[in-house]
Image (cartoon, rainbow, N blue to C red; front, top):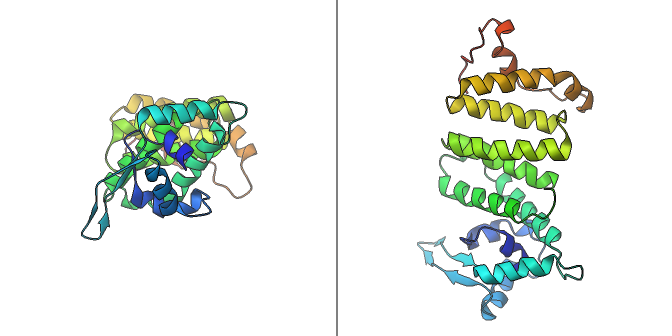
Length: 242
């Protein structure tokens, strides 16, 4: 538990979210029991209170303690290897993101902001290449920011995630293609239409290779890419709203 908390956001983690995402943590004794032990040993700090039935307690690990735990996790004889802590943290976020559909992100912005902070922290604390699960969570975070109206924040995350996916999966992988399309759409939302068109063109250029790698029945990509090319009759404009 401490190893996972050490790779999450240094600003702390809502106890409510830890309870909601408990199934992704794989704890035998449960989250609350683990937190009680950690707090008893002064390894975590619990701040805030339960207000009107709402659990507003935030669980924090001192930055120095978290750094030491992460460094110990990189040792060959580590009890909890750093790679395991990162993957469990990503699974924890996967449980939470599954319960926060994109249609609700604007209404649950505080929760979105915390999850995005955790995704960024996990990526920063990843040694080596990010896993497919972490890349998927980063994509969810970027899409959530766009859905909540933060086009600039979405672009930054999608750009970084696209770089990771090209390096880890290759330029023609279907998930890379999807990431590229999502970034083009985010560029449109941010008013960067020229960059959006360039990416849409690249999506279509890579389309045949991506088709060959997709499972049967999977759609190759959304149709927005085709609408933004001069040959589509749009004159190179992206007129349809996102």
